Length: 273
Image (cartoon, rainbow, N blue to C red; front, side):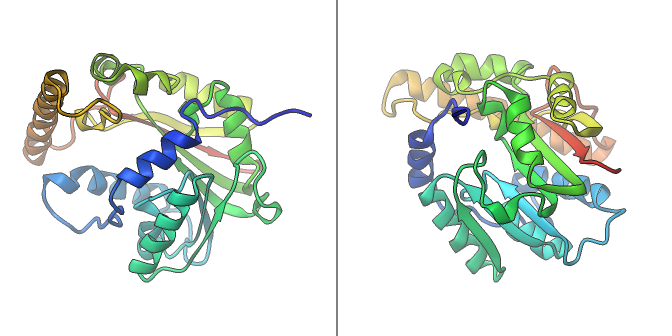
């Protein structure tokens, strides 16, 4: 019997991460301030992406939905009927609380994406994931598992951190164990995995000019001089990103790039366009 590919991070890593994390605040694109700048840019991205769809009542699934800020956003902003799938019981319970606090109804299932509930197969108009597929050695295989839950003619939106650029180099220096649970991919490799899974790629692009705050210090022992130095370095880099975002208010968005963009997005369709 063929076994499901292993998550390089592992369930214990995610359970611990969610136990230590506070409950996520649902994305609100109308909230101002630099701390919400990335979410506002995402909102512009999704508004453009869904412009050709009549989204009210369509079904959207987030795979890797543990403690996610996004499902209430998709329900409130686009009136999707939302569902989520994750294998962390802790993260799934957090997501149910986030939906309830937002006044949003949604179906959250705890399970393996390689053996999803039968009712999820070919059931969703849109399937999204944020920072999921890069944790598996075989990117094509995990993309194919996501695609199995997309309706014929539906859309798959995949976001990963851009660890093929400077973000990856910084992550390696600041926290190598976290870097090692990722597979660094560029946009061409991410697109190739989607095509290899039988999908038609609409776009595969770097997103945002910079956001060094994406780097992760999870697991770095607290209370040491090394930890304090790493935290200080990351805070300085985050301030550089914030300065760039302030300048974008005057100049408009700066170009994305392989070298400095924090994210890569791939949009693909299944079957008929």
